[in-house]
Image (cartoon, rainbow, N blue to C red):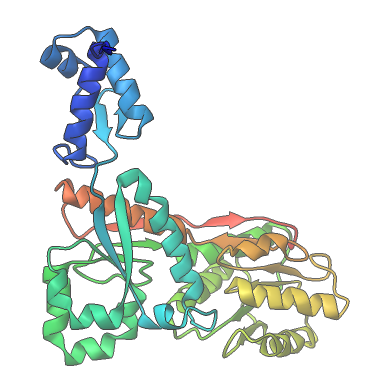
Length: 361
């Protein structure tokens, strides 16, 4: 029996041809694709046929039509490799005991959220391997947790050639940068403004006796938050009571409770506590529950970070979102733009923090 083979429709012929070229990488991700007029002229077809081709390529995720620009390529057959450098302890221990566990996980969520859209592959690498094989990453696309530059600043001073290679040859994009590192492109969030948002929110609720609970303010991220707290009081003409400021050496619950107990034992008691992290704030909430204090009636509490569990604390915690995921997303977008040579470096991408108001205030 002879099987009759029907010819492909014209739109299918064009679709298959363009899809094959996209798979071969002839149109790199994030570059401009043909316009509808281009397809009409190149393949001698009507706009109806060209529109069908566009729609099918869009449905499969190959292109994204952009108004007045035709379309951009969003997918290719081979993903683009992007390497994310973190402290080796995160990969080796991968436990909550690692100080930057929450930060790195949030950054990874943001990075992986962009993998499919930009057709990139994120590979996480520990700093030990990275620094010992630095030459191998020249001309690669590299993102780096900015805290590594802070943690190993003394080591870099002793090995200036390695730092120069990192800065001038590897040129990583720094994510979650709490300092401005000259010569590096980076993403960062205004931590000072984040705490100011929390303080000004409490002031708007009528609070004037506001305490502050923090970890070591010598560490840059906590120093920036502390400075935001001081400036917010000053700008609102509220005097600073140093007895209201407590520094805890860690986030262990009993240590937090000791600090809260000292603050609340003062003759002049605070009506609100601003905490430099959500972990501290949730410890405060637990202290209040154990000691019969109503939140926010007896004591209003704010946190910082917008951890997932803050939405389910008792009561749900008012906190500041420092936009860690968005920092990572912006870093990937920047890498793609840099590949197309559409940016001149260094670039500092600043994100605005967001106050998440819940029942603790």
